[in-house]
Amino acid sequence: QVHLVESGGVSVQAGGSLRLSCAASGRTDRLIYMGWFRQAPGKEREGIAALYTGGGSTYHDPSLKGRFTVSLDNTQNTLYLQMDTLTPEDTAIYYCAATNSRAGGLPRFILGSSADYWGQGTQVTVSS
Image (cartoon, rainbow, N blue to C red; front, side, top):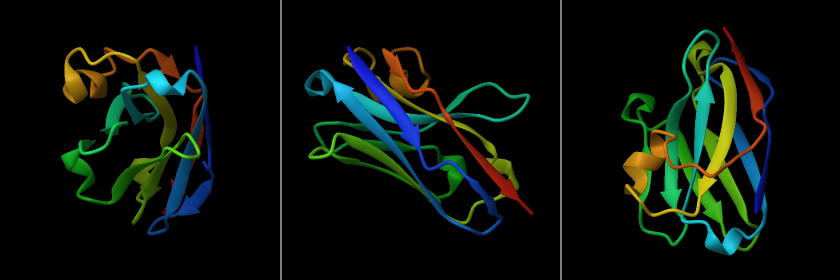
């Protein structure tokens, strides 16, 4: 079993930056993919960034235009999402997720289909 806890969500003004954290505990050694999803008001949840915990493979939603960066500190079992040049359209609840499965690779994971574990979410609000 793995427990994920997100933190770092706050209210910021457009143009600002935030770094979200996701602390993982439990059997983290079995995790294959970890990533970030978000759900904006009135919209479906979407995968925005993910990585292979063994290194060498990452995914970022192209629509973010390089503003967000996902990273993993294996020594701290913590996943990060650096978010720069925030806009009001980034307002959402941000969720951390992880899976023990390699099936379908990152593409399947970013769709949310293979996530085994989810955090409770952290609210990010960007004002204009």
